[in-house]
Image (cartoon, rainbow, N blue to C red; front, side):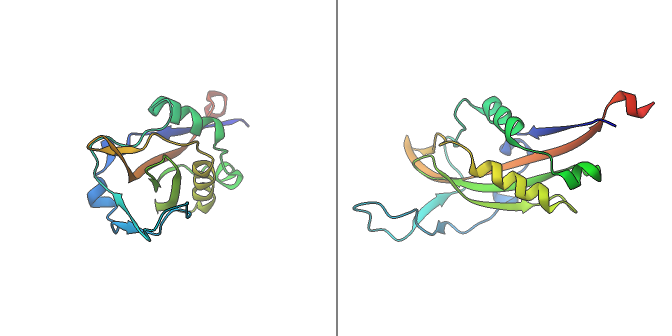
Length: 155
């Protein structure tokens, strides 16, 4: 029996309002200390003029996820499908951090673990901009784990 799965990526703005679904405090712990940095907190923006972007754009992000996400064995065995929502911060230098699952796939904690593992592997992003200045901002990413049986199984 052969089964296929798809990892789907959707634009974070087309599916839900960041303000309604992911309200978070505006400050967070500072990034790792760097020389001559004295601030203990920095602002993380929920709304920006230009959203942070993966190198190569949305299609490159979708390709990256598709090539790196491994469908969890238990989800495969139990034919679990669903969409999870995660949120992370892209800081003003393009580093990805503060990854949180905002809505998991019920019955599949392994799917959440896998999504987090792959987001941690991401290269630097192009940071969000306000007034042409790079800023730290939240990025919301829905990921669908879809289980599809091949035609030979449905006959």
